[in-house]
Amino acid sequence: MLHITQAESDGVLTVSLSGELDHHAAREAIEQSEDLMALYPCEKLVLNLAGLTFMDSSGLAVVLHLHRTCARSGCDFVVRGTPPQPMRVFEAAGLPQVMIFERGE
Amino acid sequence: MRAVINKMSLKFESRSVNEAFARQAVGAFVAQLDPTMEELGDIKTIVSEAVTNAIVHGYADKTGFITVTVRLLEGRILEIKVKDTGRGIENVEQARQPMFTTGDDTRSGMGFTIMESFTDKLRVRSMPGKGTMVTMIKLLQERSA
Ligand SMILES: Nc1ncnc2c1ncn2[C@@H]1O[C@H](COP(=O)(O)OP(=O)(O)OP(=O)(O)O)[C@@H](O)[C@H]1O
Ligand SMILES: [Mg+2]
Image 1 (tube, each protein chain N blue to C red):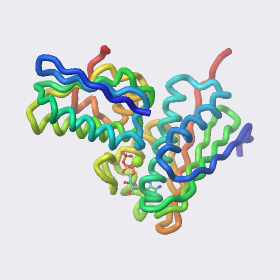
Image 2 (cartoon, chains in turn green, yellow):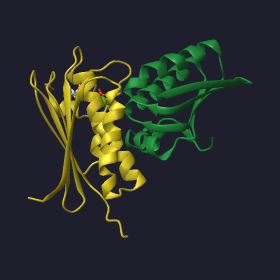
Image 3 (cartoon, chains in turn orange, brown):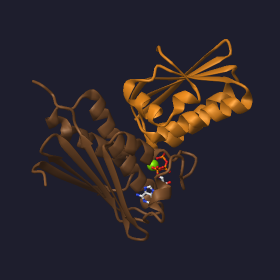
């Protein structure tokens, strides 16, 4: 099960994903984050993954999708607090070379 | 040939809820080898990748059965086979290239790349119209008691 929550302040939209991000949950994650971005136009999008307990390549598509949407609308994009297992998946795919991964909650 | 220490097999329908079931079941089975957290994460990830491929690509427009077979071989060698009798792959070499995908926008074409990087050997046998079998071999680190 994947849970999606959001918080907005001073032009920064934080979308937090917790639980398991796989193919079963990917479609919903993409659609809900897109809806949130339309609802809260922001200067910066923070994708907080600290609560993820599992992620596979389906998560790559979600992150790449948001990265692209932000690039198109001129909004900064960072991925924050990625736990070790999802981080290994991002690293195997070379994502840290093309976008910003931050530590922290 | 290496001696088989233990073996199990799971057969389930190609429904996306079964992705979590398959990776958790395999994770529970390999727990007897006392893998590191990183190894366990890698094992769950590669099972998720291969099973998701069978569901999304193998049985794109129908429901079929997926079989996952796990063998623990002498010397802390783990062998995982994921088999479907779905559509099959026309060109396996091309399919294994990073970023190659025939899927929709929830796919990025990185599944085989991840399976390759998290295993010691990845073999893909496929026949168009007949199905696909992915075999993954992973050597687990020695754990001193
Ligand atoms: N079991 C299968 N049956 C039929 N085709 C497959 C199967 N597994 C993989 N393929 C083909 O190989 C391609 C590459 O697979 P891979 O897992 O690398 O990427 P993907 O599934 O498209 O995207 P991602 O795994 O990043 O979500 C798929 O797009 C599909 O065309
Ligand atoms: Mg895949």
